[in-house]
Image 1 (cartoon, rainbow, N blue to C red):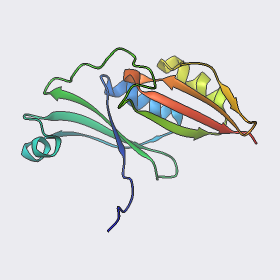
Image 2 (image 1 turned 90 degrees about the vertical axis):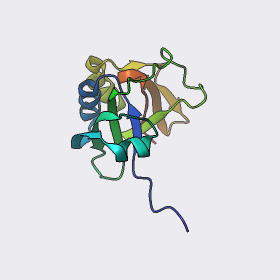
Image 3 (image 1 turned 45 degrees about the vertical axis):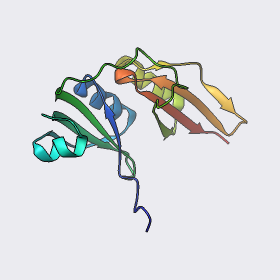
Image 4 (image 1 turned 30 degrees about the vertical axis):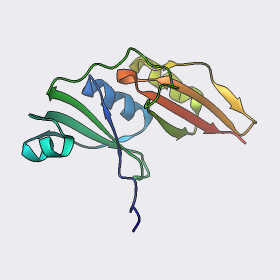
Length: 145
């Protein structure tokens, strides 16, 4: 018995509209948006009184998906302010891009901040980590070699 596939990665955000705009600007596509609530949601998440709005965005090839969600009930738990990338349990999402500099320019108006600087990996990739909406760490990689 094996898993069939990785379906999506879920990320809780504090501003769903801003997060959707950021990932659409990155080049993802909106698959759908809905509100989740009811006993099945409570059972699945393990919290009582769940009311959450979610937006599913996918990569253009349809294989990678992010489920962005914001909770109105119960109130979201606070996150540490901008935890570093080496924090245990910290997440990051990585995307391959065709033009790293152009991608960064498009994302800066959406609050993207490069954590270090754009690095060269052995002449094969240009890479960087950036902080996006709700503190999400996004890695970008441009193949150059």
